Length: 95
Image 1 (cartoon, rainbow, N blue to C red):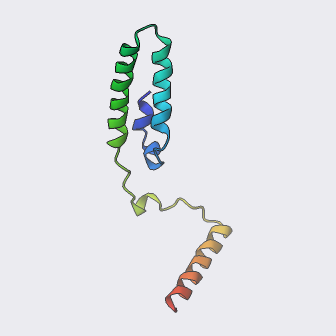
Image 2: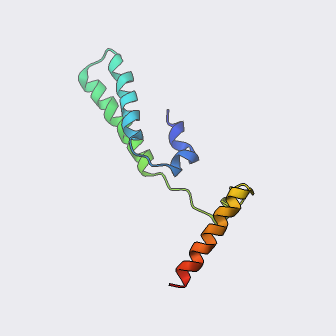
Image 3: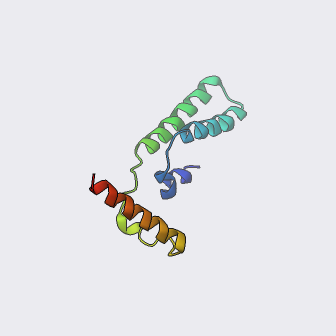
């Protein structure tokens, strides 16, 4: 269950809602067991604190220009996009 939190691809995305989905999963597992309300609540609080600490402790992946080199294909559309970008930057400089 916590493996999803360790995934670097996930770290690049917004964490919104994941904690709530995980809490819902924990609750559904916990509530299906036959135990007292106090025991279930204590279990939920403990697991929620662990997940919260894990999510809040995530560090965004450092952005490095070298990781983006070569991501775009060398085709006619990409070359047109680069040319349009260069023209736009040139127009912005002359302002």
